[in-house]
Length: 121
Image (tube, rainbow, N blue to C red; front, top):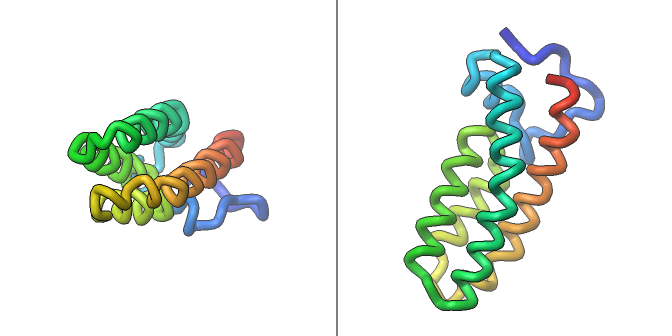
């Protein structure tokens, strides 16, 4: 099964890899919609919490939360978020706040790609 023909407005695979998502969901569009909507709903609150944790120097908790976001991004096929979350997680604790804008940008791109993809599923 697949999600149908890729349209000219399909998101770039480096932002949202539809082939990966298709494999992860075994071609089930309802499941794909569910996990994409879940990521879209949860990622902004995860970023809010990461901002707070960085401001409070809660480094271990911030790394754990970035790891959770990385796992969610792996599930939907968002390699930019995966890479940014890995970089955030691997950064020296004092440098994590500086790594946050890259992660925020990657999440924003993934959410925009999700919004563009949902009608085609």
